[in-house]
Length: 409
Ligand SMILES: Cc1cc2nc3c(=O)[nH]c(=O)nc-3n(C[C@H](O)[C@H](O)[C@H](O)COP(=O)(O)OP(=O)(O)OC[C@H]3O[C@@H](n4cnc5c(N)ncnc54)[C@H](O)[C@@H]3O)c2cc1C
Image 1 (cartoon, rainbow, N blue to C red):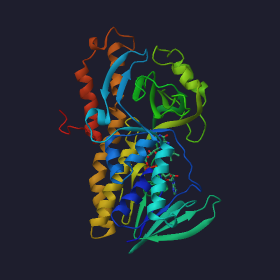
Image 2: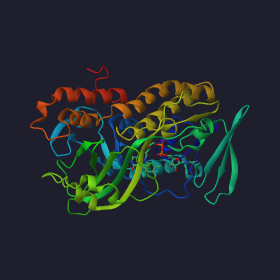
Image 3: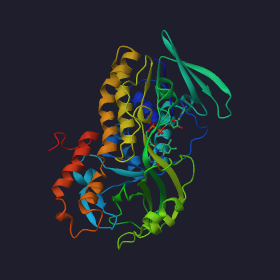
Image 4: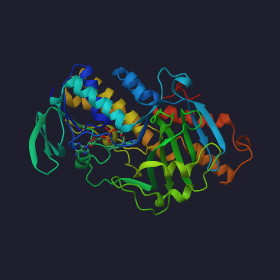
């Protein structure tokens, strides 16, 4: 079976490795002419690590990132709300890791080059459309200079071309990105370790300004400082959507955080210290009823782009990859495998897309703000019990597929 993968991001590369594990060959077609380490931090939850460990990448990823000890929630006055252990510290077999997206991408990319061979990775191939006739599919490409490239024929085409997927657009031409007024700015700052130096922090709420902060590399300067990833987020009614490609400007958001100087964290200093700031919109798409169209299917962000509020975008893409590889290795024919994969993955991922909108992990921060009227509180127990907060956190894990107790108790 000739399998063509469009897009060599996290999902496409994971799929190539999962197919290779099962003895299936494939070719990857990626729009960028040269692979560079782009992006900022990304969190690999235990269910993503389970898949990556199966691909033999656990040790490399552990070495390249930081294992989270705990997840801690604060309000915008720096008051403690809730804390829970994470990954192996919470009893999972596998760690939860904060890592630079570029490093994760590099580890996957190097593994693909080594295991499949560079001849199976075709850079500077921008997919512009897919056609199907009886018995095969044809993919059309253009180069970065917009020159048409030789079309590729395949038995099966997997579109892993991300949130702005050209292949998805072909099947859903009128679909729009869903933007609910939430913009984000991301950066990395060389900084002394915050709290345990292995803490994933959510401070404040999306309604009045929120910071997500976690370390992604240790001792980057020989003086014990870490590379600390941060994301500033705010919902503003009628706000224009942030760009993907523009550098972020502190004057667009730093004002919100100007008083966030706590004895354990100085947010203005964290923002000022950033090497680069990137702006991103918080967008997703409404779940669609179908990913598979004959010999073509969608995977990862192309299939189910979700708000990046639960660290699940990469995890779900990697789980898609293993599920699809398994179906391609066992089903009688390509189209049948693609349909079986869709049947297994469309329901669970649609539920996560919805939950990331309505009750993501930082719903805890929103709820506490509601209960306190957005004011400082005397003690969190006056508002809500730790047990109730734990239940809210567990519910998200159950829906996202990484609860230690899937019965939800
Ligand atoms: C440059 C970049 C930076 C990111 N940074 C972060 C980050 O800092 N933190 C975070 O949490 N998430 C980040 N993400 C998103 C995160 O990596 C994805 O949500 C997740 O990994 C899902 O994986 P995916 O393979 O579906 O999509 P992606 O990882 O986005 O991969 C899609 C791939 O398809 C390629 N592509 C797009 N269009 C075409 C086309 N027409 N033809 C061929 N190839 C095409 C893209 O270049 C990309 O390599 C980033 C994504 C990208 C592309």
